[in-house]
Length: 140
Image (cartoon, rainbow, N blue to C red):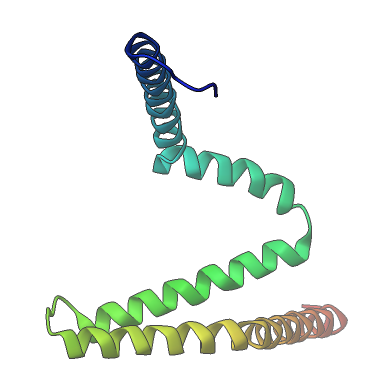
């Protein structure tokens, strides 16, 4: 920036800076509007789902996402049961702590529960298969 030596140059510089400021304000407003549009819940969900299709292709990530969802849902339901519609700050704080504990517990134990459930189902299927084969041998 050059030195200003008289009032006319000062006025011209002020006008230029004011014009530049107005242009920057307009650009900021446009950017804010486009950002607000992109941060709408519907757009976030849409972008998340399209990204999930790409990322969720592997079994591990889908399983992890499912486990996380189940843990969060269990925690949320537990908190609603503990807190209800109470406005008591202590009850709400205890509810948040219980929610965090339930989320952690369910998230950690869900793979084990899935494995046990799968074993139980496979045993039931084996028992059914054996029973059906025995019935065929007898001739029923």
